[in-house]
Structure formats: structure tokens, C-alpha cells
Image 1 (cartoon, rainbow, N blue to C red):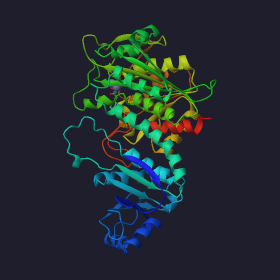
Image 2: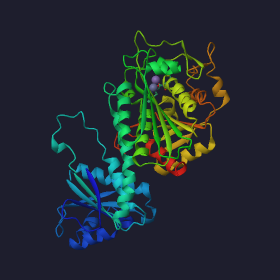
Image 3: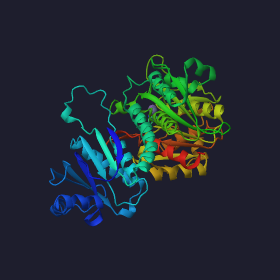
Image 4: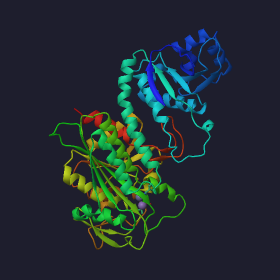
Length: 493
Ligand code: BES
Ligand code: MN
Ligand code: ZN
């Protein structure tokens, strides 16, 4: 699908999309369509009295006479004054979904009469985000069953400005799409080595990518991460991505991701039902990789580091056992009482490595870490844990701005005491189900060495079972837009 911008004139073919405001008030484009069709828009509104211009509601008029277009799609915009960037993106998303479903080959969106700056770019961004599909493994679908939209034009009173604003948003979408691709890939295709190869492709955007193999990790003392992968025939990897868009002397910001390419639970094996979901247990690493692509793609003026720990958690004769003690890069010994609490083990070494090597301004890690965070927050909010109030507040605000919501959870000494081990420095589970997401956060905190740090537990938000306006069901890439926004608002220039 090619997206372009044009002025606000009526198209010669395809679908034309126009806005209706609260209480059925016509936008200028809708009024002009009404006039040219001899009052068809007004008659359609009268025939559909429940359609009152509520935001994201749709009303379709096929084969209109008096104009060249083949279909008019009216979209509710609600109150013009309340249309912010996110609302416009959602409008773009629901319109796109309808254009896909109706198999339009070409469409022009004319949303005038709204005051928001960059409104055309935001509508286009929302449409683009919703247009994501993962069809690479379909071989038998008939063309009629697939969307046909080849060309989407968005009208704007200032098309040069719209084009410019969209150029930046498109780079963010590139990052989102990479994350969704990675998260959706099955684990027989995406494993540590092949994931690392996907990261290497970012070199073409100017990202410096290093891949550490098991030998190098062993030398660094990453016994926690290596223990997780030791039962798998797939070797583990640690990938380091650097985008140097800031000044040479600028301390970098660091993002760290859990990349368990499949989590069977290991010897503490999971039940079979739903285990297929554990292909997306690399969601944190997927977000970090997509974020690096977005930052590099839009040439963000920041030095950013992405570190992802990649391992496959399998049971086998060589797998680690419950009760094993491993030594992490930090030097701390860990008693592995449950091999299914593996994400924290991977992150223990990835976090320690990131702060030790880069001395970052802050670290944010992302991980599909616990089922307990889903019990706590469901699927609308990700859990936020932090040792730094400013970082926490900035993340929360960025999440609000892009509607990827975070809810801060507590950390504290009494939780921390629950992971003191009888025979090692720390154990990887508390032995109680209570406060499971917090205990996991507490474990991570033992490996951040006082660096300002936040942990996002994204287990509930990484995969969606239903379509939302800008996120088709499946991998959401929750976190890419949020962290891009965090960087843009506070750490650039
Ligand atoms: N990858 C899982 C957490 C998870 C659960 C992610 C559901 C996405 C959806 C993690 O490795 C795990 O197994 N956690 C255990 C920890 C427990 C053994 C302390 C859990 O949450 O049950
Ligand atoms: Mn697990
Ligand atoms: Zn896991």
C-alpha cells in the first residue's frame, strides 16, 4: 500500500472518505460531496439515524451518482475540538480496516474542518499502523480474500507539511512493523541465531550491531543467561545495538530486552495448553530491536544502546535443573529453583552487561516476565517498576501520550528479602505466588547496580486477541511508540 498526500480536491476514482462531526454536522468535504451528489450524503444520514458522527463510527454509500468516486465512506469525528493526534490516528485506523474489508483498490481520505496540526499525517499514520499484516506463510488464499488497497491518498491543506510530518511517523511504523514481525515469527524460524541475523540488518541504517556468541558470553561470566539456553540445541546470543545520533560525549540511554525465543518452562515444564504463546516470549527483545530501527530510521539525536539476551528455554538431558546454582556476570550466585522463571536470569546478565559497559543515563528493560502481571493489571496496562521517580514519571507520561499505558507497581525491602537463598546470594523465585510480578522486579533490581532503571513487564500487552483501531490482533509492538516518545520528549538534542 502506497500512502501519499494531495490537496483536498475530490478524487477521480476509488473510495472517498469524509468526516461527519458530532450531531451529524458535515465537514467541508462532506458538504461538497453532498452538493455534488444532489443531497445523497444528507439522505444517507437521514436513512441511518443512529449514525450521529460519533468518533470512529462509519457509514458507507456505494455507487454514488454525480461524482467520479465509486464509494463514499463517512467517518464520525466527534467534537472537532477534541481531535488530538491519537484520536486522528484511531480514525485513520478504523477507516483503513473498512477499506481493507470492502476490498477498495484505491481511496482518498479528506478530513478537513479539524484544527489539529499535522492531522493528515496522523490519519495516515493510524491507517499505516492498522494495515500491518503477516501473510508470509499463506499459500492458498484466494486474492478475493485479501485486501486490495494499493493506493491511499490523504488530503491536506498543506501537503508539504503533512508529507514532512509523516516521513518521521513512517520511520516509527517501520520499527513497529519489525517488532510485530519478530514477535509473530514461530520459534522454529526465529531462534537466537536467526534473531541476531535480523538485528544485523539494522546496520544498513547506521546501527552498529555486535553479536556475542556463547564463547564470548562464557568469557564474560554470563552463567545466568547461558544456563537458560543450555538445554536447547540452539545456541544463545547477546546482541548489542548502538545508534550514535547524539554528540560523542553524550552518555547513552540503554534499552534491554528479554529474548526467550521459546519458553517451554524447561525442566519446570509448562502445561501444554496455550504453550504456543511462548513463541512471543521474546517480545521485550523485539521491542528493543524495533525501537532501535525507529530511532535510527528517523535519525534521532540521541546515543541509544539496545542490548537483548536471546536464549531458548527447553527441557533436555543437558537442561539446567531446579536447584542448580549459576554464577551471573555480576558475580552474584543464583539458585535456580524454578527453570520457568528464566526471563529474570537472562536479564540479570543483560542488565549487568549494559550498565557495566555503557554507564548509561538510565536503563529501561522490557520483558514478558510474569503471568502475575496479567493477574494484576490485565491486558490494558503494562507494569512499571523503577528505582527512579523521574524516569518513572517520564515513562508514564510518554505512555499516556501514545496510549500505551503503564501502571507503577511497588518495590521494597520486604519483597526483596523473599528472594534471599539458603545456599546462594539470591534465588529466582520466592516460593509463594503472592506478588509474583513484584518479586520478579525485585530480582532484576539486584542486577542494575544503582543505575537509574525501570522495568516494564509487558506480558499482558505484547499480544492482542482482538483488533483495536491502530493495532490488528496479534503482536502489538507495545513499547516502541512509548519509548520513541520518551526519547523524543527528554533525551534528544
Ligand atoms: N514467559 C513467562 C511469563 C508469561 C506468562 C509471559 C504468560 C506471557 C504470558 C515467564 O518466563 C514465566 O514462566 N514466569 C513464571 C514465573 C514463575 C515460575 C515464578 C510465571 O509467571 O508463572
Ligand atoms: Mn518461563
Ligand atoms: Zn518466559
